[in-house]
Length: 127
Image 1 (cartoon, one colour):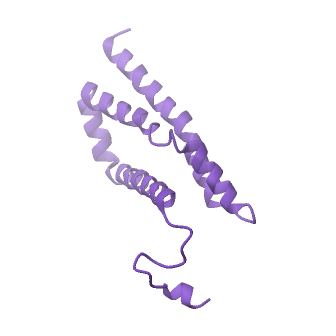
Image 2 (cartoon, helix red, strand yellow):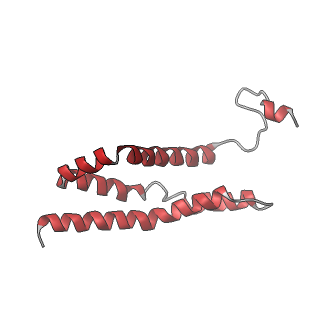
Image 3 (spheres, one colour):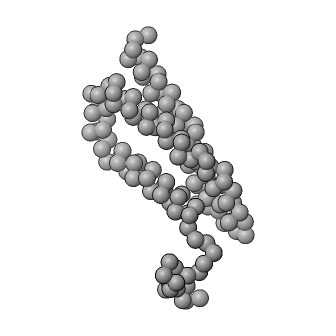
């Protein structure tokens, strides 16, 4: 087995680990999206407590695979990043927005019907 084969196997292992471990995060995101009924808040709280400690750590595998590909196969990295520029950036924006939404939901205020300045929003005035 050559060094290039070993690096390719490591990259495959890293991407597989990301797919398996982050799959729980993505699945819980879908579950959170479709949570409904009287237990909606309880379901969302259970999801936040279940994936809260590990949801960001799963992205380490993706970062490892990208750095490994960049440092070991620069021409392949160049070809992939040029050929898949738009899809890769959409994935990157999606990962960032998903993480931001998760954090904003965890620290968002649920108790007060008023905004940060104490004013009621137009949607709340209608009620």
